[in-house]
Length: 79
Image 1 (tube, one colour):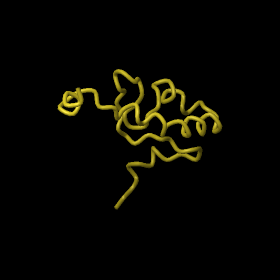
Image 2: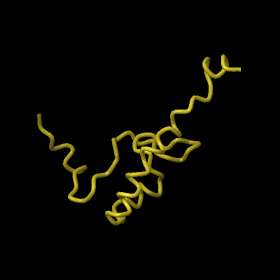
Image 3: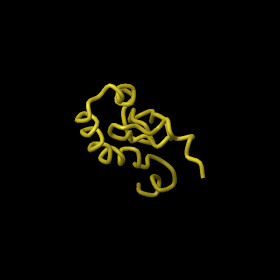
């Protein structure tokens, strides 16, 4: 398999957390794919390796913010 299509995504510096599923959650204001804010995404290439590492360390903790169920059958049956 030829991997040339993804070469643009590979860099020498710390990897981007991008998973190519780019959509900003309307309430939480973070990307549903990588959990970064729009500002973090826009400034990623300008950040120092230390800034990127700090953000990377925070991302896992942001994931649950998008997994809270707010409606549907399960929410109605809890009341």
